[in-house]
Picture 1 (cartoon, protein in one colour):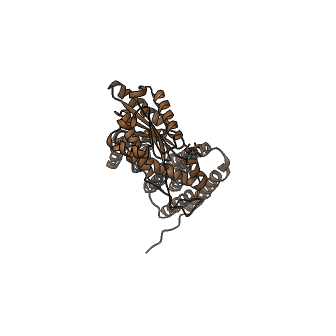
Picture 2: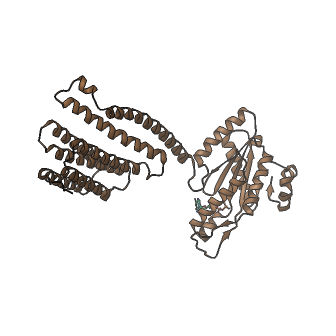
Picture 3: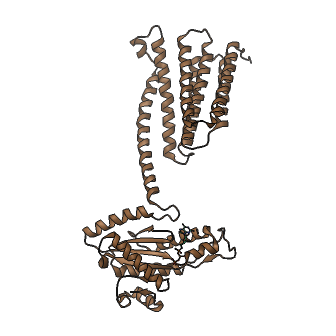
Length: 422
Ligand SMILES: Nc1nc2c(ncn2[C@@H]2O[C@H](COP(=O)(O)OP(=O)(O)OP(=O)(O)O)[C@@H](O)[C@H]2O)c(=O)[nH]1
């Protein structure tokens, strides 16, 4: 077995490359530490540009054998540029910078280049090898930007993007080789290797795929933002804004179709005590759990949202006041008989395992107050106040003689507990 002879030029160039890279890395990750992220981003682009300029210079100037060394150095700089670029974007987006990983990539790149140079590998091999690493750096960086590998579509998107980028670069190299060659003419252009055409076709396909994926990602982002803007993060119900949107839609449809629309405002009783006695963590668990319990008592089509701190509003399509009362009573009873488990939650009373909760409900429907939403909200609030005034853990509506008008499902328990107030 014969060992390759060390090429002095390559070793010197690689060492210069290593030193330069280290200096640049230190510069960027050290001195730039306190400066604006956009500096890193711009620095990355500049380094990238510098790397490729160096490569092109090495292609134009005839340097007898030294050329591969320059190509390797240029590619290393290019990878460094991409690395800084990705880190710059990470900073702009408020993520942590990959310091040591970037250094690792640079070291691997330089080691590979040095080995390849000492093996007297042809320039094209060197370019391909480096492009491969560039792809890796780019994919790795972009993967992290796309959310640490959680979103498959984002991953595929960035993979396609990086393949697209590296294939495009390769095509540019091939094209420049033809243009820079002495015999550059149409014949030599047409005599391009088949793989160049294949690469071109792949680039086009990748372009289409990436555009499509970008579209999907944008739609998803839009949907995510929409959800974030209209959802209450604690309870998973709609927030006030989402509730208002839904109420507007439901009101418009109900009015157009001359259907009744119901509304309930459900308020947890003595919730302040829960917070004071058990702490806010338990309070949050109670809120979340009650929201889930209320949701379980609703029908498909009913809409629930968090109206205030411990208040929920429920919109009921095609529901008159009697039916609204039935539902309100069902919610009241369900909450009453479903204690909230707080096992495992950090509490100020470690011996308590479950908390019994009750709710008061104000019910209203368009039948008694009309379709104007402000009027409905106000009336439901007033009824809630009435329920609280009469001792809590009960339901109140605008209707008179409610007890006799209620259907059987509610009238018996309602009579028994005398909790429904007209
Ligand atoms: N843990 C927690 N507490 C909240 C949240 N939002 C509001 N609160 C608390 O809910 C409590 C509401 O107290 P009050 O308005 O006095 O109502 P209450 O104690 O339920 O009394 P009544 O409604 O009259 O029965 C306050 O202590 C708020 O701090 C929340 O998101 N999490």
